[in-house]
Image (cartoon, rainbow, N blue to C red):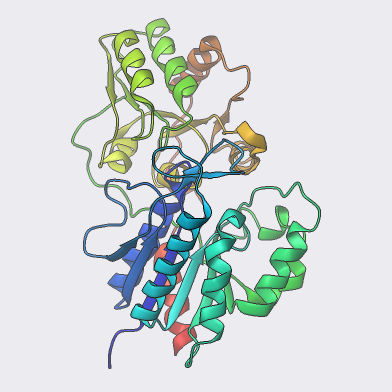
Length: 379
C-alpha cells in the first residue's frame, strides 16, 4: 500500500514563524510514513522546509507593509494581475500533479486573506476532485484579532462548507481558540487541539552564553537587538551575550549593530543550533512569537518577552501576558522600550530562582500529535 500523500501549503509574509512551524509538522508527517509535498509562497529561508521533503516553491510574495494589507514580489514591487494569475495556475498544477489524499492549508481561512486569489480556486479544485482529498486548516493557538466586521463570520462559513478538520496547534489548558476567535462555538465540531508544535528537547550546546537576544526572522527586530547590545554595556563584562539578528534584518542595521557591540557580545544572523543554545543559556530576550516561545518552553532558560505590536498585531501580546501570568516569563513593552528597562529586567532574571521544565504543564508534542490525528482520520 502506498504512503498517503499530503499537500501542505504555507505562506509566510514577514517573519519565518509560519514556515518554521509548518516544517516541523511536515517533518513529523514524513517520519510517520506520509508522502509530503510542501508548497511555499514566501522568500526562501535556509533550513525550511528541511532537506528531504518534496517542495514546490511558488514565485515569492512578501507583505508590503507591517499591517499585511498588501503584497509585493521579492524586489519589493507590488504584484500585478499577471503575477497573481501565474501563481494561481502553478499552485493548481502542483495540486493536480500531486493527487493528494490530504490537503493542509496553513492559517487560512483564519488568516492569509490576501491569498484568496489562489486559495479559493484551490478549494474549488479540491471539491471537484474524485476522490476528494481531506481538507484541513492548520492554525496556531492564538489568532490575530479581526478588526473588520464580518471577517469572523466569513471564516466560519468557509470552514463549515469546505474543511474537514481545524488543527489548532496549542494546549487548551494554556489558551483556547475561543479566547481569540469569538465564533468558535459555530465550528466546535471541526476543532482538534494538537498541543504546541515545539522542537524536540535540545541537544547539548556546543557553546554557552549567559544571555541570548534573538529577533526571529529579523524583519522588525532592530530595536530589541539594539537595546540588548546597549544593556550589555551596563551589566558585568564577564557575562557572555549572543545576539541573533535573523536572516531578514536589513544589512545596514546589521552593520550598525556590529559597530556598537562590546567585546563580550557576539552578533550573528542565524544559528542552526538555536534550541540547544537556549537550553544552556540563563536568560533569553526575544519577541513572543509562537516558535520562539516553543523553543523556550523546552528549556530552563528565563524568558524576557517583548511582543511585536506594529500594525495592530495582538497575537504576541496575548501569548506573552499568559506566560507572564503563569510566572513563566517577564514582559516588557515594545513601545517605549529603554535600555534601562532591559538591563534591570536581565539583572532580575539572572538573580531569580531557576525554573525547570519539570514545572511546566503544557503539551509540547504538537508535531507528532498532528501526524497521529491525520493517520487516524484516514483510517
